[in-house]
Length: 561
Image (cartoon, rainbow, N blue to C red; front, side, top):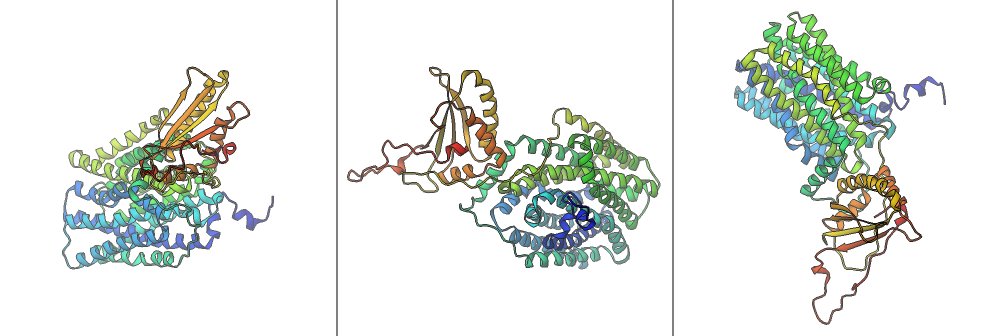
């Protein structure tokens, strides 16, 4: 332990610790400029829409057009990020967004943009960022050590919200002085630094021992992992609710500036800037909040504070009071989103990190997109003030979700376990041979039956989220001490993946199940090829060399199956 100030500055839980890593620092600074450009464009697009139409519905749809792609393509984007070089995926996705931003600037300069074209090109920009998000976020763990990952996640949130602090105000000035076309052009230019930094990044990764999954199978693997991970499911559900209710603030901000505060583009930019300042304040305090409060208590406090801030925005007619309320709203919004993000990042192993983060992005962005559409429709029917009051009331009652879906406790990231040797086989197999049936026999003392069964319920989730299906546990009615676990894998290659995907805690769980086993003989594992037509030699003069053979167990004592 040391009291040297230079080391204390970069303590693992310090918010500045990740910045000592050059790759992260360069990408973080470049992403700050990219976020600045995106928010400048957002101001230009929203304000341009208010000038083209008086419909609150279409104004709110600008936010929907930017966020909806994240909900629609995030899971394929996450699968692509896990399957391919994340640097290349990020460069391609930035190219898509850059093309959309450039087209929007050119067409607006030519006077060819109508509300439908504006929404379509915002959708293109949003699609590029939806593809970019999982690759960028999941690569953070490659840029910093595991102990600084929570701080790196918070810093990425700070990057966006520093941009939100100044971007909208700058955007408002640009729109007021040079028009929306200048905002669109600025966004296109500000993509270039991030594109350059990623192009120069020499990412080093160990090549996978197994061939990559096909896209459709990778998507299924991601969905299956999330469906069998209770902690991630809870975080995603709470994130979706927060996005739907809290999306009213960003969606209706142009109308708050125009109708409640009777201001122009600069007022709109300043209000968004106030929200961004609050978000930076929140991000800077995320480490302290995690020390002092549990995740559930912190999320509840954020929801209650957010509800009060939204009500204040609805009732205020003074820009200063509205800005103060938005500072509070921004701080607690950032804290809640960062807590959700950290919960997902630390719960997902590396092989499915991109897909898990994609699901998180889909939850928050999909919630904002759907909520924006709903708040726009309600505003058309009842007015801005009523819509915000309803949003604030719903935010007040949202902590009740914690009674049914309490936030999980999250510690350090669960690291991947060591790679196991492949089992010995004496049957001719290819990667596509299958389905494979695995049977594991345990002999358990009858007085331990209930405890063993409880452990096996967790083993079931572990097997299923890593690739198994058709899992069952059976007890021999003639020999009550004999239990048989049985599950399937689609192919031999899928089985090899499933065998090596468990994390260290999952391997420990499997070992707990094996510790119940009685007798001198190890747990017996059978691996069988179901419907083995391709393995049988149908010619009379070609013997089947594998007749009656049982595959041996490799490393059974260490819990590998």
